[in-house]
Image (cartoon, helix red, strand yellow):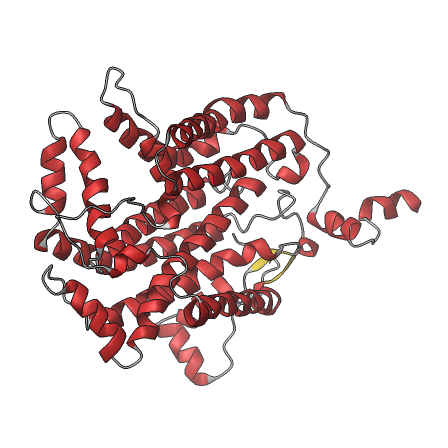
Length: 428
């Protein structure tokens, strides 16, 4: 967004002036993340998670490229090459644990980033494109993570690929052909491992490209803020640098402390012990589960147990993909003119219920498929879809939001005990 009060880049060193004329990268950086980009002055630490997601992606690309130099995408030696990285490559254990735990940290940051968007209404106009590109990034990350989980070629890797790709066979007429096309054969083997490795290597760079579009789209309307009120004057903003670069640095420091805690003290906490057993097509694990960040979607997949017009397995596949695709339509499902849940008490309560519902789906996804857990998964799945398709449209039409502040500055002054401009005018 072009603010009339934004600072303009004026290089003073001759070399920088020449570079700016020939290739204006310094100007681009200055306007994108420097003092030339004004942002709302009331952003809280939940706005750090976009930067944290970028940092996590850089970690995954750097460690992934390095691991790829030592990994062999062959079903006969993939497991052994993974173990060799851990034992024989200099700092290989660190690279492998950083990459494996980095995936969990990346998805955790992304989930919090999405939750912030839901709470503060960041998907509403004029930022619909920012949200839509964010959902595309989420899908790319999910695909990349699934393919990466297959590469160590342990028991969970093999049987996870077998089970998940097996669900595509439920699609009428073309399902089995799609499954064979995905795997390159009738079961996970060399062809599947090579395909998954190639795509796992490629997709992070595609994701980085979409992230650039995501940031570009964000700079057109400007950043949202906790009040949901648009910027109205220079007083509502501060330069991104140094104010938010310093704030982001604090968030990145905390992120790396937590990340280091996992790598050095609990590197296998979020993994499954069966994945340290080499893949065996003749030995099925007692309980097949994906990584924790797939568990809610896996629970939705398992919640359909009865054939109704279509095969139950096909209903599960449709529901799993629909649970993510629903997010694409969120800017038009929620028709409330108020963005922030801080001023929408009814919506806030239903959003809290949705959070617990997703946590319940995560529990069910990782639990055994007992009658009790299947029933819990079905109830949680019904509520998930009801939230977006029934509750949210009704709440957006019926609720009475609290009064919004006149400006971001007024909200900041009220929060910190200052005097708002409106009160000052009334007093005078």
